[in-house]
Length: 187
Image (cartoon, rainbow, N blue to C red; front, side):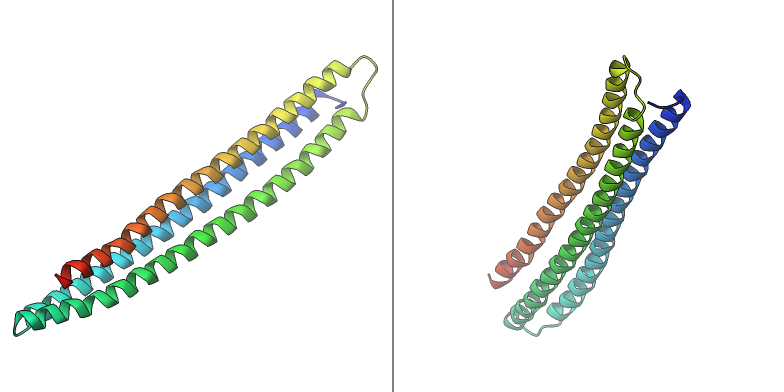
């Protein structure tokens, strides 16, 4: 077992700090992804407003209603293309978030398991006869710390998946909006 309680405390502290570092890393990656989506949404909104103003100007300058309808229908096609481009960019951002998150989580899990194995080995290598209960308590504490780490990782993954689901819903709404606008313009 550990030669002194300070050695065990330092090992436990290192594992806890590692868990906290992992949580911070995963959270920052999720926030970075959200920032990218917000930037994409702002750029798309700006582009849509500018396109809408230009289309409105063209429609208002049309000589007759038939020409105005033709201009409106012509504007629907670029709108659909813009929505497709938005969805593609959004898909790239989501894929990057997922890839970075998975890579970081897997690396941290592998390192945590390695540290946990080393810690358990240190705990059990010099066990005195009659100390089996103390070893079991230490092993349980270590297992609980690692389980807590896995729960944090799992919760963060679920949070990223929830963000991805919301982004997918928003993308579906964006897909439907140009089709609805084109249908209105056709009427």
